Length: 409
Picture 1: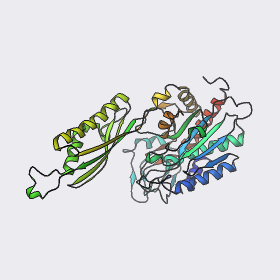
Picture 2: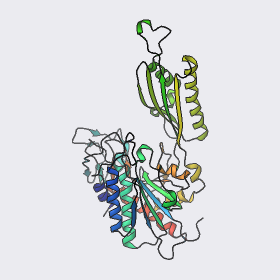
Picture 3: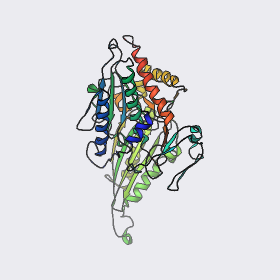
Picture 4: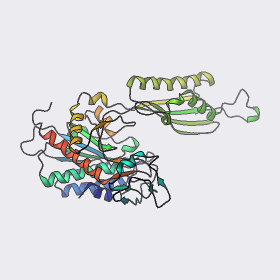
């Protein structure tokens, strides 16, 4: 079975995570998919387990004579992004895609002028949703590619070292690594399969923090408000304008960091704000957190102590600090991408992956591409051919590490 054929089966299951649920996993559909994958792995002859928090782990013992090869892991996440619906997905397959605008039955149009990548997909088998839902390519494509690689490995008896597979819940709401048992997983090194185009290799991501802000106003009748009222909504706006406008997501790219206001809710008496703070450079990241703290302190100095309560916490760090000590992971992946007939390109992630946190938990873990594009919205798409190449990349990585028996570095 080709990877895209598996993919079309897996996307029938809604696995959208929900950050408001308070449960782990956050949505029961994640268990449904995990149990399906467990059954398929067992049919292949692979021992797999799904724990009570919906972490699926599977292990394939090394081929006889390859026990000294490093243990390599591959990881993808079960959940799809909140927001645009992930339920009742109706995929559309565009055979021999012409590289032009894609018109959906619902009337939406995915235009090449907005998504230039489309012109590069000409002649391939393009897969989209019907425009009313996600396609759920993030990250059921990665799951499909790993599962297909395992099936080929087992059927063709390809020599390999110990292999470790994990499918995790709730990555999209930042909880994918919360209960990941690195020791139980048992890999020396791993790759997440959760990226964009298949020729892309990602091992730099943002340093990340979140800011939760509560603002306490002084509500009085507007007719007698002078010198007394403190409108919490106005204070929220004032604080927001203290942060540089050129450091918002819509004004940044590449390695440029940002402050992103993700939530603002309020009235005169009280308001709440949420931010995410991102920067690839650790020093600049710390400066940005200091800027946020300084803005809160300035508000409190102006309106009185306790007007602003700031809860600032780090989320994850740039995996580059770990990966640069293990560059064989990058070199191996780049060689594998070349085997797939592509030129490897390293790109910085303007976000994060489970691999970033796992790297700091003792499991160096860069990110591989899946061949998908436009994630987290109705214009998600992927091609069958790029999924095939992702499978080739995974198998080539396995073969390369198998050849390093007792001679890792």
